Length: 124
Image 1: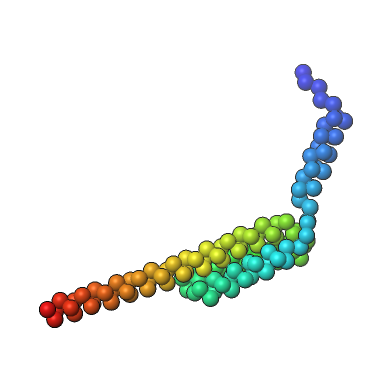
Image 2: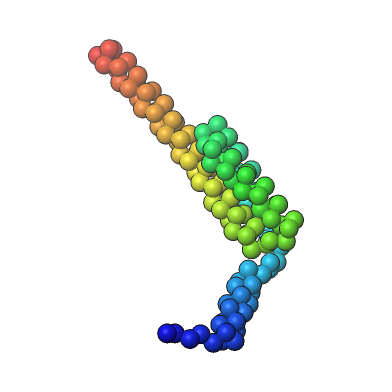
């Protein structure tokens, strides 16, 4: 039979709890991360992500709103993680929107080239 020392067990649990509370400390307000996320969202909107990547843009906005709630409750570490995710989501939305616009421009150029080829062939 394995006998446990209750004092040793209590000390171990206390040490783990203290270590975890240190990791979960509130830290500093992530104001710069909030500004970065909001700037990324504005850039995504300017890149027409509202039309081309609305779900991803909405995800970024929701994460910023959730992070603001966490900041009000002084859960700065969790808020900062959400703000980092929001920034990446917004940047991805902007990049995808820009890519879609570039693809459309290439398709338009290719159509114009084909039209010019047909005109040249009809003249010859």
